[in-house]
Image (cartoon, rainbow over all chains, first blue to last red; front, side, top):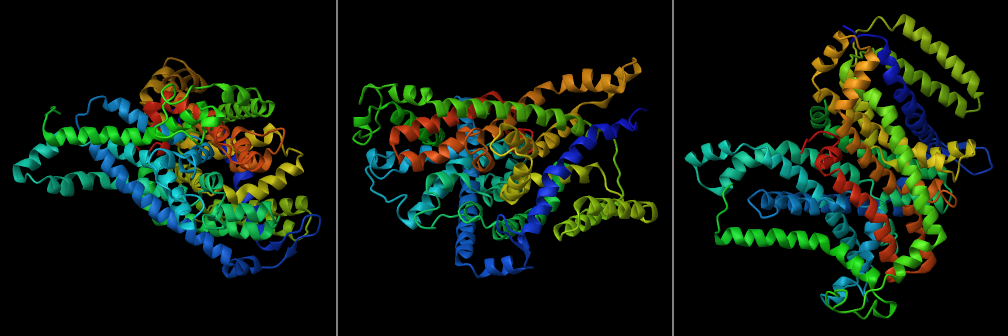
Length: 282
Length: 331
């Protein structure tokens, strides 16, 4: 039929060219910058891998890596566990379930920097909600450890609903007959969960894990607005460190090298789950 | 499912309501703070219900919404978000359709040759060779490759690989392209213009539109378009009149989701929109340092930023799961 007309290139090529110009070219450019010492107004000097070597010796880089990893591992684990629990909790006869589910999705598109500022009003040590209403005097934003806790808490508030609605959708796709059949064999709730619910949920859990991890590694907006990376550099994530290298020191070469290290980290995560991604999207 | 009024059931229902209340609390608290008179900001105790514990005032909202920089940021954000999301769909939908309906099978070796030559030209140019010369030389080498080796190796890629290539850009940390974009935009004198931010937002949302819309076209029975063609519709006709019409709801939802993404974009807005093209997130980013942490002020600005995307999330409710998983889960 007409499904082989050369018109297909007219449909596809504009986007391919767009991506080559606006994504592939900048990527290449950034890689190039990472091998150079860049001073504005002067000729760039090729220094090979010196920027990368410097990164491995820089204590700020190790700090940012530690902060980002803590944020990703702790934050995403809490989101997965809470999201799964909430999905199980809501997957039953509940009055007004659709309204409740809709309310839970509200944080998903909320402007991240707005969310950060909104939570300043919660965590503020004098008039914040936790101080004013619960009476707890906790140095949320001024103590390094509590600052990390508050950044993770905000991310949990923001993204647990995502895990929740995806897993709820997966739960609702399980036919009731499976459970009826299984109840003939066993009546233990745990066994039903272990041998029916969990195996069916597993692909969705892995998908959510990939999407959340790859996003969490890039986190910028929330620590930027909530703590500005502080106190000190206690909550400075990798993206923020890179951004500050550009903005405060105009060190484009070193900044690009840092950005590439982050890119490599995300690429490792994504490619290690590549089989699942391919299966989900093709 | 039957409703059974057992103790467990009641406890779990209450628990579900408690969870929802906890999730609503930050919104409620920000609203409460934004309505308080300045004298009450720090002194209000308990849950601080307006009317019960303090006389609510809209004063802060009025001040904020009449300030010139806020109005300009609102205008900038709206123009950028609408234009960028519209053009993302204009560019992305045909590509998505092509990937859903046609077969593309580029030879792997040709793509390798292309990437190799591109890197070659780029390396040459960055070490001082005139970029036009480098580009021309690379193009000649590429043609030579494609003519000779291009037919030797049989391995081909498919539509799935092209789709995954688009999708992979979604996983890219945006910080990697900040400096190149800055340099490119300053080359074209586009720093601090809305156009620069529109281009950036199109770039970042294009993969999203392609992956989502491709799935929507795949889900559409091909027979409908074939029937239209049998009835004499041209290829464009069947695309425009049949495929586009039938996927209009998904397209509308995709548009809304991209609108929210564009509205929320911060990193590039901070770098490329410093003054004239400042968007709402960039305006917020400057708040803390210029005014200190003034409570009501922070609350009002946060809410102004949050309200539009939250409304979009409500409107696109049916497609929210699909949108956030890039079409992998239908929800």
